[in-house]
Image: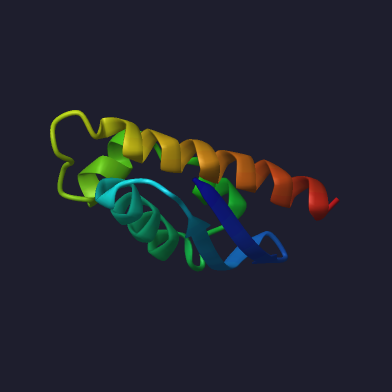
Length: 86
């Protein structure tokens, strides 16, 4: 999964994602990017796989990695956004 962020002055204006995963992965990316709108980069870093899974209303057995993958992609995107704003 890849997460894309458009930031202005440390705030996320828009977020998008790309994945070639299953339905659970698509749902995780969708919920995550909707949640990100308007958040600061610091707030975005507070997201955890457990919180995302809760926001999804749970995931099917064996699909917990979908939320974890989305959060890992988010953390990488936040780090990239931080280096671009310096």
